[in-house]
Image (tube, rainbow, N blue to C red; front, side, top):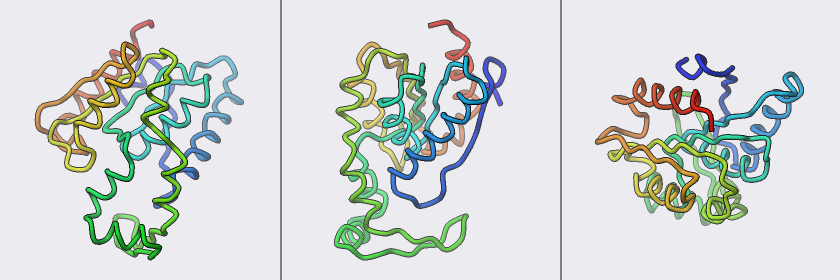
Length: 193
């Protein structure tokens, strides 16, 4: 809502528990449709968490994306999921076992290709080879899912193209900082390069 004051916003959610390649394909389809409907528009892409990884891959391959916003985005996906899932469940998935779990979407299935698909993408290499388009990175120091050091590493890899804002404490969902994060995003978008 806050970003809508300075640009048109298209918001969507990825199909749940799909491999990163599927998320990248979905994101490309959204960008293609936006560009079809508004051929002269500039694309600013915001990705949160695993969606941030999809945004990194997509923006790295698509120069139509003029600015990138990363909200609690990882660069080491296998580390992130090992950390979040715990060593035992991660090892089961990595060994080829399908895992089942319940979340807000209901009963979900996580197949082994969820992990092996990560190996197609080197997010650190993409960020290291970044072409200078502006990137805003937001991360909470208390993030319990994607540790803040990943956001710090992303900013370091981006060099002068990246602008990192770390919130004290907080969590992965920015529970205490969503309004402040929205204000920072709107101000950053409103600035001309």
